[in-house]
Length: 149
Image (tube, rainbow, N blue to C red; front, side, top):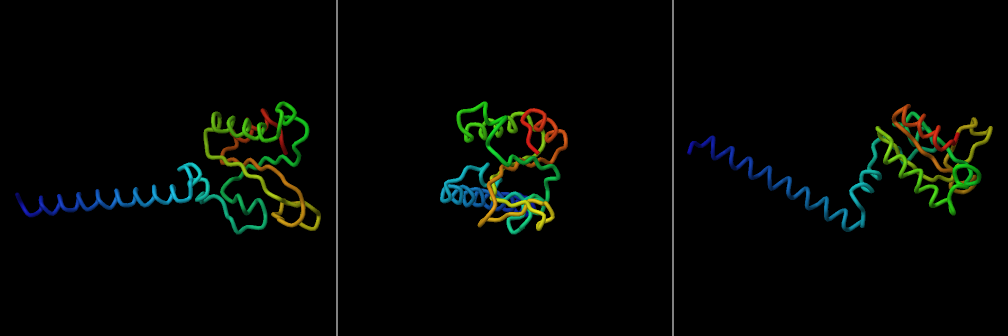
């Protein structure tokens, strides 16, 4: 064997060990947090800014936002509880959306003092459900099916 072959073999083994170690560390982290890979990706979403005070800044990477201010009326009346309705909306998105989306519940306020923009407000305001989309087509189809603002 040539020395270059041995060096390549050692490099390959080293890279293999590094990737296995990274996989092990990641799996241990998920187990410690009791998360699935999907929950981890949701938490580490680069298109979301956890330090933002306005919804449009919080979802800086998602240009299309659909808001449900109330759990009354359609589509919520189709289901026995709002939790089942929320799960149905989420399942629909997972099945039909072609691009990235996410949904969250936030305590927000919208007033003339905030420029009629949604602002995160953990003390006052009310809860609202936000579905945000990367794709205009996904947002359009979601709004046709479920409504929202």
